[in-house]
Length: 225
Image (cartoon, rainbow, N blue to C red):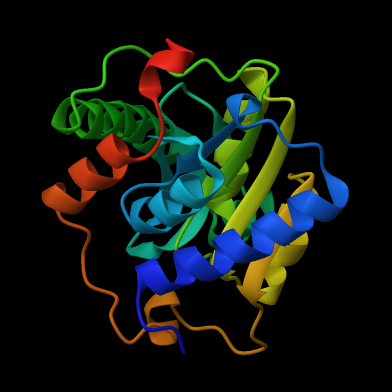
């Protein structure tokens, strides 16, 4: 069990440094750390600070099943990328009308979320990741749907190489993400997985002050404007 997100960020940062030193040419100006908000931000901060990279956010929200909002049948990003698990959709007989309404609503929500977080940290403009290497971070992965949508969004934006880093992932999600990312780094891949929070002693909500601290501390933002 992990103590908190900060601890997992330090552990992931050390593992990423080892992997990069052994296998990947590294120039910090060509690397960015992006976090899935809000849980990925404290972890992303530790990684970005240790690597000397810029930290930013990429919002991706799951599409919950009808009457089962915690069950992800897909995900969307702020730039309109949509992924849907067709097997679950068909099994639950989810209507296209329901999907269309949820997608429209969630794209709007992800845009608002990114805008709010950047406003809190006084960030202006979008991050240019074309031909750059990106490490995407989350605090845990159950189904992988939000991370898959984020990967497709980042590819569309021209990212050169994608690494996904997380403290814990279900075996199913890990296997799926390995097809979407050039490298997936997970500290734990347990055989039994109920919820991300079960692997943390402290899994409290990430508050505004922690968001501001993470996004303002990590990296020289002027270099990417």
